[in-house]
Amino acid sequence: MLSVSSIPAFNDNYIWLLKNDDNHCVVVDPGDATPVIKTLTEQGLTLDAIFITHHHNDHIGGVDKLRSLFPTIAVYGPNTVRFAQVTHPVANNDTFTLFGENFTVFQVPGHTLDHIAYYAEGMLFCGDTLFSGGCGRLFEGTAAQMHHSLTVLSSLPEATNVYCAHEYTQSNLNFALAVEPNNDALARYAYDVKALREKSQSTLPTTIAVEKDINPFLRAHVDTVKAAVTNHAEGVSDVEIFAALRRWKDDF
Image (cartoon, rainbow, N blue to C red):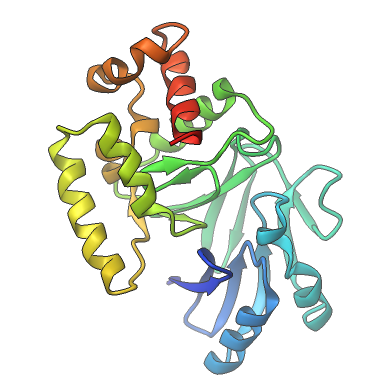
Protein backbone atom coordinates (compact mmCIF):
# COMPACT_ATOMS: atom_id res chain seq x y z
CA MET A 1 0.00 0.00 0.00
CA LEU A 2 1.48 3.33 -1.06
CA SER A 3 1.08 6.53 0.91
CA VAL A 4 1.54 9.89 -0.77
CA SER A 5 2.80 13.06 0.89
CA SER A 6 4.33 16.31 -0.27
CA ILE A 7 7.79 17.76 0.16
CA PRO A 8 7.50 21.54 -0.28
CA ALA A 9 10.22 23.17 -2.39
CA PHE A 10 11.02 26.69 -3.59
CA ASN A 11 8.09 29.09 -3.21
CA ASP A 12 5.20 26.91 -4.32
CA ASN A 13 6.46 23.56 -5.68
CA TYR A 14 5.43 20.17 -4.36
CA ILE A 15 7.78 17.21 -4.74
CA TRP A 16 5.52 14.21 -4.26
CA LEU A 17 6.76 11.31 -2.13
CA LEU A 18 5.30 7.83 -2.64
CA LYS A 19 6.20 5.51 0.23
CA ASN A 20 5.50 1.81 0.72
CA ASP A 21 5.12 -0.11 3.97
CA ASP A 22 8.81 -1.10 3.96
CA ASN A 23 10.06 2.51 3.95
CA HIS A 24 11.08 2.45 0.31
CA CYS A 25 9.99 5.41 -1.76
CA VAL A 26 9.74 7.31 -5.04
CA VAL A 27 9.89 11.07 -5.52
CA VAL A 28 8.20 12.94 -8.36
CA ASP A 29 9.85 15.98 -9.99
CA PRO A 30 12.62 16.69 -7.45
CA GLY A 31 13.59 20.20 -8.50
CA ASP A 32 15.68 20.55 -5.35
CA ALA A 33 17.55 17.65 -3.73
CA THR A 34 17.99 19.31 -0.32
CA PRO A 35 14.44 18.94 1.08
CA VAL A 36 14.26 15.42 -0.39
CA ILE A 37 17.45 14.34 1.37
CA LYS A 38 16.23 15.92 4.62
CA THR A 39 12.94 14.02 4.40
CA LEU A 40 14.62 10.71 3.55
CA THR A 41 16.95 11.10 6.52
CA GLU A 42 14.25 12.14 8.99
CA GLN A 43 11.91 9.30 7.99
CA GLY A 44 14.55 6.63 7.45
CA LEU A 45 13.55 6.06 3.83
CA THR A 46 15.33 4.36 0.96
CA LEU A 47 14.93 6.09 -2.40
CA ASP A 48 14.29 3.55 -5.17
CA ALA A 49 13.12 5.72 -8.06
CA ILE A 50 12.43 9.16 -9.46
CA PHE A 51 9.57 10.12 -11.78
CA ILE A 52 10.17 13.09 -14.09
CA THR A 53 7.24 14.76 -15.88
CA HIS A 54 9.06 17.45 -17.87
CA HIS A 55 12.37 19.24 -18.32
CA HIS A 56 11.93 22.53 -16.45
CA ASN A 57 14.62 23.03 -13.85
CA ASP A 58 12.24 23.38 -10.91
CA HIS A 59 11.28 19.76 -11.64
CA ILE A 60 14.65 18.16 -12.45
CA GLY A 61 17.21 20.38 -10.72
CA GLY A 62 17.80 17.89 -7.90
CA VAL A 63 18.01 14.72 -10.00
CA ASP A 64 21.80 14.69 -10.51
CA LYS A 65 22.48 15.17 -6.78
CA LEU A 66 20.07 12.38 -5.86
CA ARG A 67 21.62 10.06 -8.44
CA SER A 68 25.08 10.75 -7.03
CA LEU A 69 23.86 9.73 -3.57
CA PHE A 70 21.76 6.80 -4.80
CA PRO A 71 23.52 5.55 -7.95
CA THR A 72 21.32 2.49 -8.42
CA ILE A 73 17.96 4.30 -8.45
CA ALA A 74 15.68 4.09 -11.46
CA VAL A 75 14.85 7.40 -13.14
CA TYR A 76 11.66 7.33 -15.20
CA GLY A 77 11.07 10.14 -17.67
CA PRO A 78 10.20 11.14 -21.23
CA ASN A 79 11.96 9.20 -23.96
CA THR A 80 13.51 12.25 -25.66
CA VAL A 81 17.10 13.50 -25.90
CA ARG A 82 16.49 16.22 -23.29
CA PHE A 83 16.74 13.76 -20.40
CA ALA A 84 20.26 12.41 -20.02
CA GLN A 85 19.52 11.42 -16.39
CA VAL A 86 16.68 9.05 -17.36
CA THR A 87 17.46 5.35 -16.98
CA HIS A 88 13.93 4.14 -17.81
CA PRO A 89 12.55 6.18 -20.74
CA VAL A 90 8.78 5.90 -21.14
CA ALA A 91 6.26 6.95 -23.76
CA ASN A 92 2.51 7.21 -24.19
CA ASN A 93 0.56 4.22 -22.83
CA ASP A 94 3.69 2.51 -21.51
CA THR A 95 3.10 0.61 -18.28
CA PHE A 96 5.38 -0.50 -15.47
CA THR A 97 5.01 -1.92 -11.97
CA LEU A 98 6.61 -0.42 -8.90
CA PHE A 99 5.93 -1.35 -5.27
CA GLY A 100 3.07 -3.54 -6.50
CA GLU A 101 1.31 -0.64 -8.23
CA ASN A 102 0.70 -0.64 -11.98
CA PHE A 103 1.55 2.73 -13.49
CA THR A 104 0.45 3.97 -16.90
CA VAL A 105 2.22 6.82 -18.70
CA PHE A 106 0.29 9.43 -20.66
CA GLN A 107 1.88 11.80 -23.14
CA VAL A 108 0.38 15.20 -22.31
CA PRO A 109 1.97 17.86 -24.55
CA GLY A 110 1.05 21.50 -24.08
CA HIS A 111 3.13 23.00 -21.29
CA THR A 112 6.12 21.32 -22.94
CA LEU A 113 6.11 19.06 -25.97
CA ASP A 114 7.42 15.98 -24.18
CA HIS A 115 5.50 16.36 -20.92
CA ILE A 116 4.21 13.10 -19.46
CA ALA A 117 1.96 12.11 -16.55
CA TYR A 118 1.92 9.00 -14.38
CA TYR A 119 -1.30 7.26 -13.39
CA ALA A 120 -1.98 4.40 -11.02
CA GLU A 121 -5.35 3.48 -9.61
CA GLY A 122 -6.54 6.38 -7.48
CA MET A 123 -3.61 8.72 -8.19
CA LEU A 124 -2.35 10.95 -10.98
CA PHE A 125 0.98 12.79 -11.02
CA CYS A 126 0.59 15.38 -13.75
CA GLY A 127 3.37 17.93 -13.24
CA ASP A 128 2.39 21.26 -14.77
CA THR A 129 -0.36 20.03 -17.10
CA LEU A 130 -3.43 20.07 -14.86
CA PHE A 131 -3.63 22.30 -11.79
CA SER A 132 -6.53 22.67 -9.42
CA GLY A 133 -8.67 25.30 -11.09
CA GLY A 134 -6.19 25.77 -13.93
CA CYS A 135 -3.66 24.33 -16.35
CA GLY A 136 -0.08 25.01 -17.34
CA ARG A 137 1.02 27.79 -19.65
CA LEU A 138 1.65 26.84 -23.27
CA PHE A 139 5.42 27.27 -23.39
CA GLU A 140 5.98 24.80 -26.24
CA GLY A 141 2.73 23.16 -27.26
CA THR A 142 -0.46 24.41 -28.86
CA ALA A 143 -3.89 25.02 -27.41
CA ALA A 144 -5.17 22.01 -29.34
CA GLN A 145 -2.49 19.80 -27.81
CA MET A 146 -3.17 20.99 -24.28
CA HIS A 147 -6.93 20.68 -24.71
CA HIS A 148 -6.47 17.09 -25.87
CA SER A 149 -4.10 16.35 -22.98
CA LEU A 150 -6.59 17.68 -20.45
CA THR A 151 -9.38 15.71 -22.10
CA VAL A 152 -7.33 12.53 -21.62
CA LEU A 153 -6.73 13.29 -17.95
CA SER A 154 -10.33 14.32 -17.28
CA SER A 155 -11.51 10.96 -18.63
CA LEU A 156 -9.81 9.15 -15.74
CA PRO A 157 -12.02 7.84 -12.90
CA GLU A 158 -13.56 10.76 -11.04
CA ALA A 159 -12.27 9.56 -7.66
CA THR A 160 -8.66 9.84 -8.86
CA ASN A 161 -6.52 12.07 -6.64
CA VAL A 162 -4.69 14.68 -8.69
CA TYR A 163 -1.18 15.49 -7.47
CA CYS A 164 -0.08 18.53 -9.43
CA ALA A 165 3.25 20.20 -8.86
CA HIS A 166 2.41 23.72 -7.65
CA GLU A 167 0.30 25.49 -5.03
CA TYR A 168 -1.48 27.69 -7.58
CA THR A 169 -5.03 26.86 -6.53
CA GLN A 170 -6.16 30.14 -4.98
CA SER A 171 -4.92 32.34 -7.83
CA ASN A 172 -6.40 29.91 -10.35
CA LEU A 173 -9.77 30.13 -8.64
CA ASN A 174 -9.74 33.91 -8.82
CA PHE A 175 -9.65 33.52 -12.59
CA ALA A 176 -12.18 30.68 -12.60
CA LEU A 177 -14.64 32.89 -10.69
CA ALA A 178 -14.20 35.61 -13.29
CA VAL A 179 -15.17 33.06 -15.95
CA GLU A 180 -18.06 31.46 -14.06
CA PRO A 181 -19.19 33.79 -11.25
CA ASN A 182 -22.45 31.84 -10.81
CA ASN A 183 -20.90 28.39 -10.51
CA ASP A 184 -22.05 27.28 -7.05
CA ALA A 185 -19.62 24.36 -6.84
CA LEU A 186 -16.77 26.71 -7.68
CA ALA A 187 -17.86 29.23 -5.06
CA ARG A 188 -17.98 26.55 -2.36
CA TYR A 189 -14.59 25.20 -3.38
CA ALA A 190 -13.06 28.69 -3.39
CA TYR A 191 -14.38 29.25 0.14
CA ASP A 192 -12.75 26.01 1.34
CA VAL A 193 -9.47 26.80 -0.43
CA LYS A 194 -9.34 30.26 1.11
CA ALA A 195 -9.72 28.73 4.59
CA LEU A 196 -6.88 26.27 3.91
CA ARG A 197 -4.53 28.93 2.60
CA GLU A 198 -5.22 31.23 5.55
CA LYS A 199 -3.77 28.41 7.68
CA SER A 200 -0.89 27.91 5.19
CA GLN A 201 -2.24 24.43 4.45
CA SER A 202 -2.00 22.64 1.12
CA THR A 203 -5.01 22.56 -1.19
CA LEU A 204 -3.80 19.35 -2.84
CA PRO A 205 -4.57 16.73 -3.89
CA THR A 206 -7.71 17.62 -5.73
CA THR A 207 -9.79 15.06 -7.64
CA ILE A 208 -10.89 14.63 -11.22
CA ALA A 209 -14.51 14.99 -10.08
CA VAL A 210 -13.84 18.33 -8.40
CA GLU A 211 -11.92 19.67 -11.37
CA LYS A 212 -14.66 18.76 -13.84
CA ASP A 213 -17.05 20.87 -11.76
CA ILE A 214 -14.85 23.92 -11.15
CA ASN A 215 -11.92 24.12 -13.58
CA PRO A 216 -12.73 26.30 -16.61
CA PHE A 217 -10.01 24.60 -18.66
CA LEU A 218 -11.90 21.31 -18.35
CA ARG A 219 -15.19 23.06 -19.12
CA ALA A 220 -14.64 24.65 -22.54
CA HIS A 221 -17.66 22.64 -23.74
CA VAL A 222 -19.97 24.13 -21.07
CA ASP A 223 -22.36 26.90 -22.16
CA THR A 224 -21.50 29.26 -19.29
CA VAL A 225 -17.80 29.05 -20.11
CA LYS A 226 -18.43 29.47 -23.83
CA ALA A 227 -20.56 32.55 -23.12
CA ALA A 228 -17.79 34.09 -21.01
CA VAL A 229 -15.25 34.05 -23.84
CA THR A 230 -17.28 34.10 -27.05
CA ASN A 231 -16.37 37.71 -27.79
CA HIS A 232 -12.68 36.87 -27.41
CA ALA A 233 -12.61 33.52 -29.21
CA GLU A 234 -11.81 32.99 -32.88
CA GLY A 235 -14.64 30.46 -33.12
CA VAL A 236 -16.97 28.36 -31.04
CA SER A 237 -15.28 24.96 -31.06
CA ASP A 238 -14.12 23.60 -27.73
CA VAL A 239 -10.48 24.09 -28.73
CA GLU A 240 -11.09 27.70 -29.78
CA ILE A 241 -12.88 28.40 -26.50
CA PHE A 242 -10.02 26.75 -24.61
CA ALA A 243 -7.46 28.86 -26.50
CA ALA A 244 -9.38 32.02 -25.63
CA LEU A 245 -9.45 31.00 -21.96
CA ARG A 246 -5.70 30.39 -21.95
CA ARG A 247 -5.00 33.80 -23.54
CA TRP A 248 -7.30 35.47 -21.01
CA LYS A 249 -5.61 33.71 -18.09
CA ASP A 250 -2.15 34.67 -19.38
CA ASP A 251 -3.10 38.33 -19.06
CA PHE A 252 -5.33 38.03 -15.97
